[in-house]
Length: 403
Image (cartoon, rainbow, N blue to C red; front, top):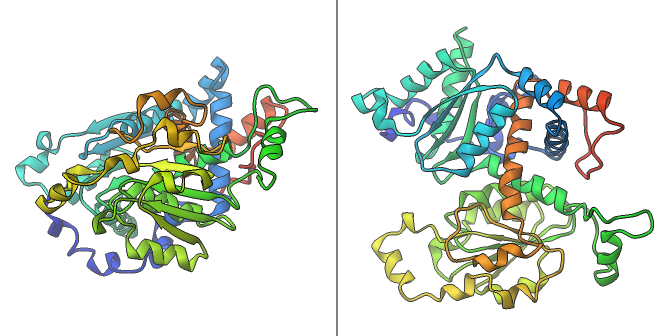
């Protein structure tokens, strides 16, 4: 794909600050396109999380499944995934299936008309003729954003236009990964357990050992370990975590410029009042963390200079060993966007704090909630839930009126 296919056409709009772009991706106080994590505010995140929890509860029964699959059975989705993906692709497909949306896919552009020289933007316009939403993952930075502008222009001309959902665009962002990360943290920091009673709860037990511990995402220390410079999931998640109060962030990475958090991200976090610190070895800071977000080193982006560095660097300083795990707080969730390499040994998987498989499953529910919002059926889900269940989900993600 040639960047000039789209960047020149939308150059002025692409060059604007993100906050100036956000109104272009909304319609009547509801998301039209999902491109940036900064499109989500606290109320919307809580609403998505509450909707996701209702969907997962409703889906446990056959009548509930029938209700969900009937919501959007008249809709069709194109999953345009020209960058390798397993979890994000399958998670979106499962989310579509939960709501009854029919899916088609393109995963290899060499099998499409792009191989014959068709402009990718022409491909997107063709897809909009056949489908009701385009969910895309592409190695090209700013392509998802450009497609959103294309759809807006078509809308202004009275032509058919459909929502664009960014499922990972170059090194830009991965906003829906951040959604599932936040949803996982919201559920984890409820500190509930099946053994809770009116006289004794897991949270009571934790507070006896950690007296300052509170429920929710406020006041927590969030650690990010590994390739925090080139990881778009880190960029998106830190953007959302900055919406909470009294948050601190620790970035743990090899002492190498390309792996350090980018200056623009740090500036944005500092402007939001986030306390930031840095470390070059996980064992130095693991004990102070309320969450540990592990990432792999993204060697697919390496230059010869990078490879020379990695031949000498000590990867053990960025590996979660059982010895480091033993120093961590009892409740500290361990997250990972996957795929993992050697940074989390398999023996860690059995620890109660290892949340990464649960995190991946949560992606299915939160992405279903996002699609329900885009197609304006989240209100129907809330109404069904309240008719058939005693109360709304008991969660820090309290249900709020559909937006």
